[in-house]
Image (cartoon, rainbow, N blue to C red; front, side):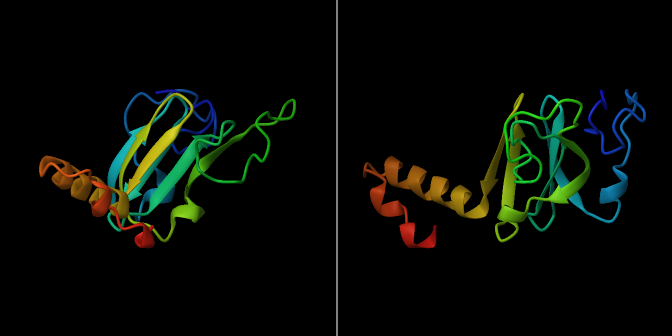
Length: 138
């Protein structure tokens, strides 16, 4: 796959193409249980439910405030991070699933997964599902 911005977990363009899957050096001691790939970014979830992101960041798809704080990069600047980093704003949550699109990332936490299951059970009972959501836990 392409490694133009470091989405393979290697320094950007070193190499620019990766022919076979390789272990991401920064995640060598992490037990990864799921990986999701976007056009030029990646999210990995470890066994403890921590989410790591790396690759292109110009649209905020890494879920971090650094970089960028603006939606366009300065001329000649690279808005990417080839090193997997735990997404700081999600560190307290247990992430269960991840999906990536062209320029976006979707993560489902354990609380959200439980809410969805509870709401689904309530709707099967014929109720509105409103009582299944405990907003005090959000």
